[in-house]
Length: 444
Ligand code: PLP
Image (tube, rainbow, N blue to C red):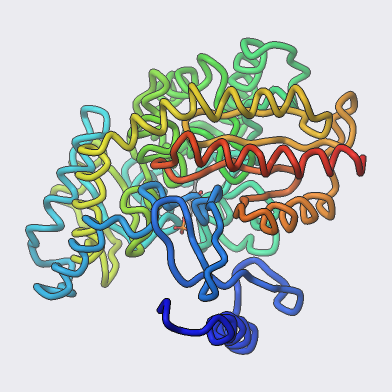
């Protein structure tokens, strides 16, 4: 590639864009206004285009590339599996699939006994809700207004953001507000008040919906796309107690927060809570092959010992996905990648973002843990009025110009690098954020 003249490499990027704009239909977008960045390769926390323009990826794409790009062990495992057995149906027993399930369960809380593999996160949520409904014989699923659970029939209706409204065709979904002290719905002034009042509100929603018809409470352990709001102390523990009181299944959606993102294997490891079902995807193999799944408690798994589970997928437990999971989880363990995310969050990224929040009036709040942080941007610190999306768009372009690939959502920048990120890379990124936040301060 290095022998190819620069002009021809620029042409490849132009060609990628031309083909994309002519033939590719993108997610969640009005198509005419799009102008995506061309990406040709990547390694570690960095990606580049054909012409060699490099970007430090502080988005991990859709917060999934936890192990970084081109991890050699994961690439080799996929190549080896492709040469051995590239595909096999889900009704067979396959050694690699079994090894993948065993490794996932090794990191899950005790009492979880089986894994149902899906193609990604949305269908993991879809199947978890179905298991809860069949297990309890009840219909309703309560989830949160500020949440994202995926783009399939039921998961998008369980979702709590704008994407639910044009897609609301599934029935049996109810929403409640969760804790979010910065924009409290409960007039709370402390994390303790916020937890107590959010729990009271959830209890009232369960009661008025008819507890005998509530199959599941579905929560992201830490809401991700909706703004990375770690729950206040006692909240998740309180939800568990409420679910137990009314015989409701607790599903924790760990699709984004799981597998290292928070500096623990699962985000739930940061709290004293044990769900009945856990959904996962993204970080389990960093998206090298599409995959997701449901981790199932012994009790719910036993429901389907003698009763048919009416659900399945042609590619459930696909061998390329399974091989990539085995290699990714082994590498994360042997290379201390989860511990790196924890240490970087506590010692480097967290303090640096707190300094940025002290310095820049445009930051209303910096919150998070591990490599899972949000900068909530405001037009006015006193009123907490969200920064308009045009300004966030300006910040996104300005960061890209500085070689940083950001993740933005509504009035926020999510600071979500791969779990392998180094202190030097964080320092580079913080310089870029600092420059762009200074520009934003000046535009207020
Ligand atoms: N659940 C959560 C918490 C997510 O963040 C996402 C995706 O961002 C999903 C489910 C859906 O996953 P997928 O896009 O793999 O279907």
